[in-house]
Image (cartoon, rainbow, N blue to C red):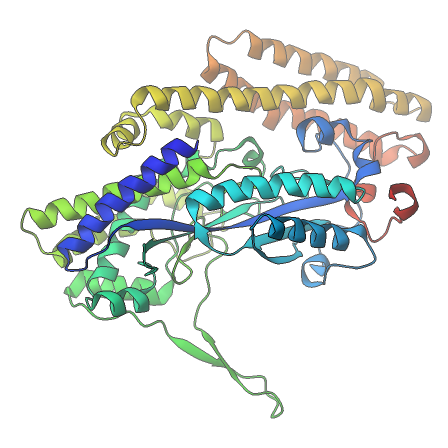
Length: 523
């Protein structure tokens, strides 16, 4: 997937420098800088070996929730404990990456039990994409050396947060001027008109091509993660914040060009011994899929296991077209401000500064005409819509045939993932759940045997589908309906079965390194 990414960055650079040149700012070229926040789970390896689902699919297809979860946010707020192997593991991961020239600047706990995060320094998206793939490999290898298993899948466990890979995205000149940093671009260009024009172009791209953004993050694991109070919903809006929104709306209404200066506020502590500090008046909105956070956008919906080539290919292609549209209109005689005003009037509906987790928001977004695609399968199919194949071909990024091939591969990948999950569930029921229920004399055996037949029948129907699109649609029903109902039976059986008779590792064993001593088992 690196070749289309190179093409997309090239197109963005070509059209972006053309636009800047028309506005009196000479740039030799543009690059896309990204910073990828990699979230993972680390679980005891001995427990991992007692979970066929984690070994084969990366997520648990069954499992009763532990009595303790993430209710207290104690894992998120605490330091990485030296009492567990996680500390040494993360330190070694960081050092191994440093040796390869990959600066993982931060390491910390995340919200869910046994969930952690690494984040590198910002860099060119071409090299950052390669480095992230290497980081994921290092994480898995080093975890095994420390008696742990690293889980990169987006939703390994039900009932607690899943993992993302936040794609912090910005555009800059080859000499380091960030187009999304108003102070930098104004100082370098001496033209305060550039920043609002660039922002208007990007807002228009988000509104026009939200379907591309959605398909870019349609990894199988995101089925369970998007909109689950840990990641944004499948509505492709953008958050700009009150200050930035007011700035752009004033610009849209009046055409008056001013410098954007975000407001600050004093944070006092009510104690003379502690001085007040100055902080930004607002932060990025964590409920938005694509918030502006000052000098960059953060694509929060990307999945933790993803190769982000496709994510940044889509973003850069969208940006390239938006810059081309503005440049064409300027060359035709319109002023940059007039073009930007028009784009904002047509596309500012995509700006949403409210709570993305509000249950009413997805329906409201549809009423406003904002892209909402709940199904990852449906999102993947959008790749070959005429609007999108024309975009990719026009920008020299993908041919229609290449779009068709990628759609087929993505759908087949989804089907294959679900089939593995379903057949693993069948094996776990036959080899673990039913024998445990029989030993414990629980009355679930008939239900479980019927469930196995249901799962096998559903897999057979997928195999009989006429094409990959039909197979993927059937797989999605199997995964998000049939398997969930079967899981409920398995989890109820686990809740009643004595631990000594239950042969699968429980959530309690998997998720709490600090409560299950395993040093003698691992080292």
